Length: 353
Image (cartoon, one colour):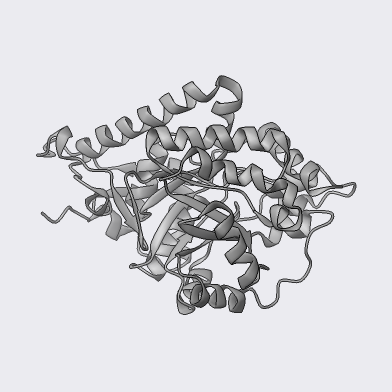
């Protein structure tokens, strides 16, 4: 099977397998503030992740590219939406374009439609320095995602089977590239142990890519003759992964992603410790079902929703949102306590004015 055909298979199966409500966000409840003492106009959404300055914590996370005309059209529309709403956008893995020059335009369209925006490149952890530099040059990337997808590769019939040396290669990329490196999981979540290893080699931004969103084990199992069904429920829920990452390294920039479907999910992700939130499957479904105009409207409405909820919580910015009190219950509470994380501190927080 060609890479181009596989890319389109991934999109179709992502839409058909859907997303679950297994992210852990339903276990998070805010403590209501009757006297927030701020105005809606006080709330600012701009953030800094690593060395990147974003006008909004929302961004379009890695989805596609390298699948011919169909993926070119998707990336064109997503890039237009990013440009119109002034949010960042990441592309899907660029390895296909490095191996087949014909596919490069499916990625270059993103920079063409959004010449001054924040655009993030994407490669797997097998990438060499030369490949990483070529991927960055291809789209004039402001940062480069290095995705970790061991379970997807193992489930993929033609996937990789050797994952040795990944951390060392990531360290080399951090040292050799002059733009931020974002290390991203693809739907199975990051543990505190993984975050500790990444921080030890100089990584300053992680995207937890938690369980509960697009399930690449299920997607790859749709392409297998013999199912590896034990991987279908494998992973760390997004809410848990955000907390584990923040607990391990409080000063690391954390991107929450994985099954985030509503503005309330986004605010919860940010309050748990993420600095930005990445959405992929949710935005893709809106684009393909309702079109570009509707996607732009949805992103703008989501920004308004974030501002409204932050006002209700008394948080003027993302840093203050990290301090609002909340209650953690059910499975998320149990997981965190088993992992030695004190959940009571979240309920005792208050914004330091």
